[in-house]
Length: 276
Image (cartoon, rainbow, N blue to C red; front, side, top):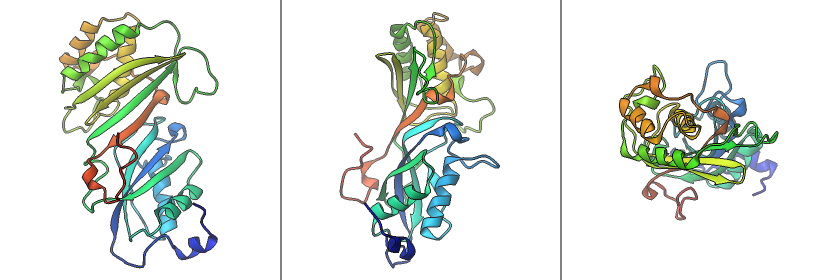
């Protein structure tokens, strides 16, 4: 929606009421130039850019809470964050101004009213990550995929990935010295698929540990290269010993592709676009 300069001067996208309400925003970002989602001291982050733009547009310091961390260099196709503000009369106008202020590698796609107690992190019912690998050199996707050499046994990788659904303790794939209160996660889907020269791994769970997806991906690639069998991969999960995991896959191939929420937290009448 086009917006006039007068909209920017008057803040016409906000109602006159002063009571603050909670909003979810869906955004995407290319993580190449950022030290992850979370604000870092003396390092660029997606959260810092978003808070700077939102606070400028709303003319009031406006903290933003995200669905979770993403590591340095990791991307997001459908990330969710929440903020509190005076009632927004024109969400599309607000979105227009935010995108005008944000860097080209961050884009806001939707802003929606939610219940005042809704939380982008704690109300997430399921998260989905997708990892992209390419078997041929491609200068246009070097920052968004892992370009590998040699053949991989994808059937063995899928046999091994299926074992992930049988476990709930993923200490083997936890980051060393992380502050996790628990390493319990419920993986509901994990599968590789081939599309031309691209090999794609999709994994879904109620939550993920820091570096968990990259550690799982790297270890599964070890299965594909014949360094271990699917049964040995299962034993590695059961051992709950991070020293037995393979090398983590490079950050640039990883995308957060969905964060799903219970429909009842949304107050808008239409169905959320990020739900199936």
